[in-house]
Image 1: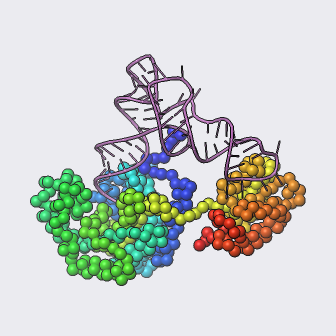
Image 2: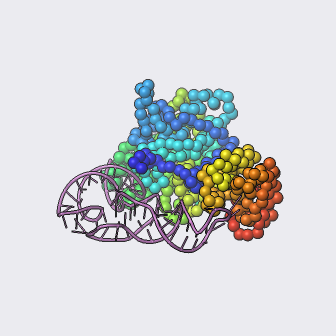
Image 3: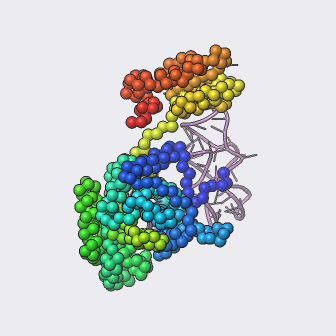
Length: 448
RNA sequence: GCGAAUGUGGUGAAGUGGUUAACACACCUGGCUGUGAACCAGGCAUCCGUGGGUUCGAUUCCCAUCAUUCGCCCCA
């Protein structure tokens, strides 16, 4: 192969594809339980959506966007995140005018960022997330955290650390930024070059610095908690109290500063370190934002939302062997003994598929033995043989791959026969009717 | 944008300056031409990322390039 996938993208297939499907379905399902509804903005937006929405000073907009000019000379961008898209979608369609607040939406799909690929980081990756728009309160913030926590719990991530912080309102941040600048002015000469540029651009980010030598300065820096305005402090206290009341564990982390410009007040991240100790960073993150919708000339509604990195979550699940066990099994595999019976096999397969059974057939008949091997490899519960003897009498042989029991059945009676087998065959633990140890592929077992 | 490591079949991987490139798994074929997890026999890399150089000779040494992976930055 001389043509490969684009750097930073990845193909998903096999068990991994199953995992993605399971994870996405589960997340969507739980979001629905929380009364969030699905929205699907386009992958492609005018670049302005993100320069306005995400903010021109953010790294994402400055150097990570896939932007190009289309044939109509318009600047378009593959979305690097969803929140700005949702704001555009909501204001453009005036969804706020006809629906009760808060507007609650969830989304799932690929996003694009031009970054260096590495562990848990891709240029095209999938996000699942929610936005709750129009209600400015601690309880709205907490609802999204509860939702995210519930999702993580139900996909099997037990030891999730929720890091929580408040960035306060505008007043808070202005005061705090000044305090930080004043404090760091004394030390900035001795700090790392990154911090020196952060000092100018966004002093808040200095708190996020990982350079060992800088930590001694950061330790004693002013803390945002001391600068929260009265309103912000009350709100943050309320968030913490609510979370405690709901028995949701969290850690307040002063240094938690989100990289997107639009956040204010409550911000949070979900961390999970796999048992192998690989650090994927945050598997999800979110927070409250104040002025986003105004950027799109909508009403001045605030919002709160989070997003998960599906790739990171699937990686973590894979590492810790927590992937749901979805073996792609078949009810039946139809095996024609000769090429001339393939059409009959297709008819029989179609007949069973219409009845709701998952059925495949062998298109290139070979020795019976090797077709049985294929049936086994495909995890088929039954093998159906069509041969000369059978066709003459309009019958097929159907064999239970587990019990090895086989029977000759009239084609006209095949559906009834299978229905009966499938409905009565559920006595032992595995549900297939036999009493031996083996993997079970029956419907009822799978639904548990 | 910066730093580091790696690059041999479908996969995991040995290996050597010299002429047939181990081994394992997977796969295919046959032993068993109407019955599948075992066993046995055989097959499966015109070639060791690509280009150039050193050499009588390179998959093995050098340079470049590309790709992958990891770290920093930033982020999900």
